[in-house]
Amino acid sequence: MSVGWNSLLRGLATTTLLLPGCASYLPAIPDPELVHGTVVVGRASVVITGERARLYMPEIRFFEIQNRRTHERFIVEMNSANERFVLPLHPGEYELDRVQISEGPFLSMAQLTVTFLVKNDLITYVGFWRFGADSPKYGRMLSLSMEDVEDDRTRAAEFLMQTYPSLDTQTVVSVLPNPPSFQARLFEVMPYPRYPTYFRRQWW
Image (cartoon, rainbow, N blue to C red; front, side):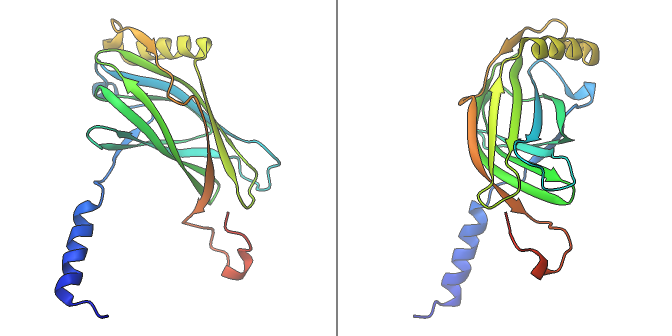
């Protein structure tokens, strides 16, 4: 049965209205003028947990978080294998929902469901986030563990006091995301290295 143009256009309009808004980009270490009373701080690292089949070391390209009430999205740009992050966020409940891993020209993405709470006028330490990526293969997985590491928490507080003097009166509290460990499928995404299609024997 054919569908009339009016019905099709109404459907497209409805789909457009349901599309999520654009995400805001945040650097891992923002400029001091962007940082005020309510701050999230932590560290993220990534390693390959099996044999490294590629010449490139893995890096966290970015991770994405979302305010669960307002649905405002933030992409935190890392481009590092091991980096601290400082996020000036409004109080509320947030969800870590995506992370992208780069290995040279290869990009992989995992969908996550991990939540954490940001309290008003406090420095919230959300732990040391350790991502472990399987070797490239079919069914590749990404594991995540989040720990309250005392030494890293102390260094984070020292870093904040030195880099953002306006925070010197703020209290640091530890709030580990929930759940503190997670595992998800890691999918290859575009852009893919410019090899002819017949050389791409596996799309991991």
